[in-house]
Image (cartoon, rainbow, N blue to C red; front, side):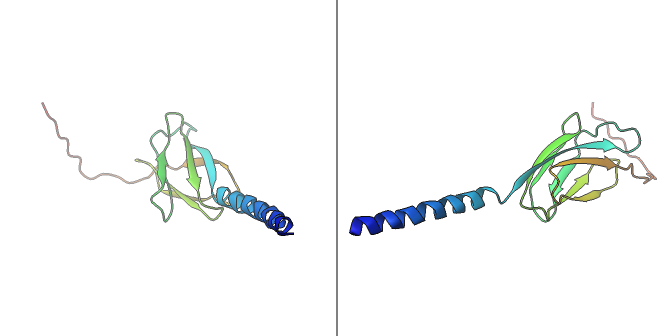
Length: 117
């Protein structure tokens, strides 16, 4: 009788552990994408992609491609690059993003050149 109760308890414990393990592994997701220049569609290499509100980030490779882990569908990616305006993109249910950056229109009044020789 005691063995039967033990088997029933173990039989109930195993499915519960499997469910908990699945929930633990499915909390985040990987988002991939490509960052391009909105003017000519060329890839933007070295753009910074960060998850808003966290210290998690990555950069684009030479082809403008990136890969980053987000916690959930409410995540917002912040994309910045020199010469382009900052852009924020809500991830939602998407796992593959195509982001077009717009060139910034700031003009420099002075330029300082430093040479070492």
